[in-house]
Image 1 (cartoon, rainbow, N blue to C red):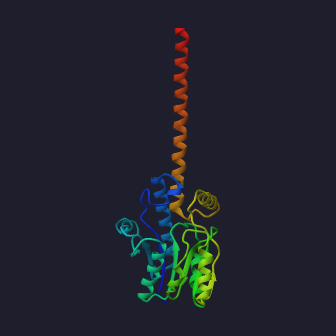
Image 2 (spheres, rainbow, N blue to C red):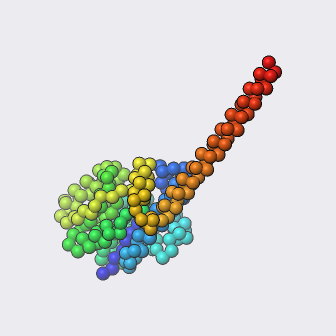
Image 3 (cartoon, rainbow, N blue to C red):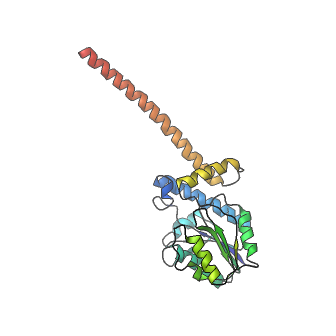
Length: 246
């Protein structure tokens, strides 16, 4: 059985990755950690291939970061093209089970992916819904590309539209449990809370990056307090000089 896990990813460059989570450089560093932790998850599976499908121009940056991973450049831009490209290419190469996930769910349990692949024995499609109405996982045993057409991507309607399309195409669908992508500050808060309850071995790169963020904030807060005291001292001295002059 030839199986592949595909990650939808991109180069972790400032201004191009997770810009809603923080300043450009910090957000890119956090996305880099997400990507590395997701690749660690992929290695636990021991499948024949792990692939990152990515936008044009990201190949060199990703190659330096993702050793032993197949890189697949999209034909054009956009999520629809990424999904079509990923499934078409893998089934053309003879893979029998293809499961695709995002690269921004660093604590996703490996058991979810194992369940998805197993369900493809008697289902045509596997979907993993997100709370915001999208999906974080889709798996197939044949390329049903019609699932990706005329979808309102990046909206709360994505999962429902995809499910209706599968039903109209007569496809048997298995749903795995709900999970979440880390896209917004609220998602990051949820991730931080979740990490406090999980073993240290889960998402080590993400943990290290967030700890670095926290240390930087503490240093900045300390520096601000020192600067504030200095400024108050200067103001007090200036006030005394004015009083003496008067």
